[in-house]
Length: 422
Image (cartoon, rainbow, N blue to C red; front, side):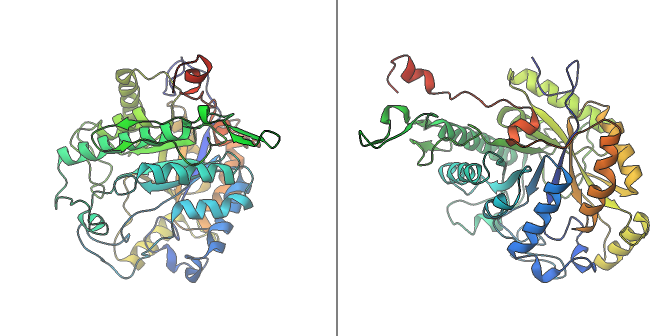
């Protein structure tokens, strides 16, 4: 059965996602002439970016989020004041842009460390209804002590240990499991809406999930009907080190190189990896395959590689010069947990073609400056990939349709159909 990793299987067309974050993934992006900094906290900014990405033909977009200011040190309220700091709520932004887009999947990030799974399940299920089946979700952990202090219910250690990373990821795994059960807690035909009999709902087709774990005790059922996709797509960002090499020292991670990958393959439909180069890409694909086998996973799994892209400027400025200018404006070089591709649209197209040949299903591209790099991708990169026969524009449909993932059966359906008490 197709496990979504590389190997002997029928390839899907190259999948492409776009990662939207503020003014872009370079810290000095907000200073660029094409960026209107006073619109970053407006609905219009996100609507404009989403429409451009939708028209370009990306399968999905992701919206970053967090519980602390972006420029803050590990355990401080605020850090640098010359970088964009502050965010709108990603799930609410996704709900705002859903009605003005038609094809693209919408994948907000939310923290599972300080947010209850019941609230998360309802939020993402609502997004799936609003977008007519185009919702996804990226669960993320929040290890910073300053973020825990916002809530006052738990404390985080000043230094992140291997044991703490494992604990956070175990908790995240339970959170995703609870959310998935809550999505299934209404069967697809639970709503009767029979005016003649006065029955709106079939109570026998609502199920208590009765989850009992180390971190959560959740009864259910949800108060939101089962989403249009049955299960919105779950995407996990799997930071990992291979052979002691780390993509970046910026992102805390365990010395157990497979910890994040293990969480992703057990909990997600899509795994985003962060290879530094083509060699590490292959190593990470092998790691995903190994962890999938160890978990006994049979459901399809898509693997995309993250890549920061900084392309030749709209006025013809070479990418190398553009990067140097932006770095000088910020006072430090651009670094990332993912590889950074600074070059022409043709060079990026060649890189994507080469890496796709290694067996990855696609890419999540992080534009350094928005909308400039997004527009270059739409104008020059996606059309060339289509010309090479590597991808096609997504047809109307759900996000699962775009990713080649079937709509899952409801785990509780047989309990009623077979006469077994729920």
